[in-house]
Image (cartoon, rainbow, N blue to C red; front, side):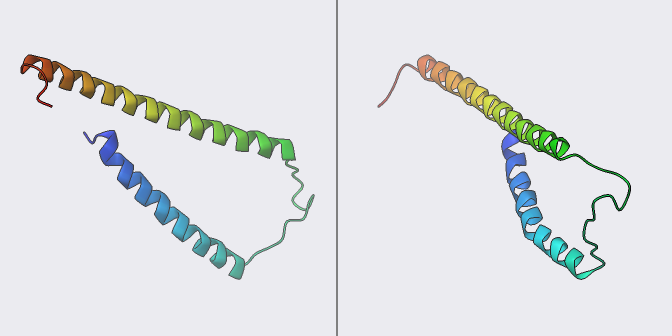
Length: 96
């Protein structure tokens, strides 16, 4: 099972690839059959507050995910420090 540290570089690579490919997709959509938005043309109306709620929800989800990820990594580092302190104490003290 991959550790969170081994997954992080893959995630960064995927995000960078998305950031590089997204403008190309937007450019190709602009060259194609782009039709400007005309309010009321499709018969459906979407309110702006809905988009605000969706945007804030996405931001909060990303923020909570980041905090959980940092908390888990900090807990892992704390366990490693405790293990190293235990090994150091068992080996007879510091050799600094």
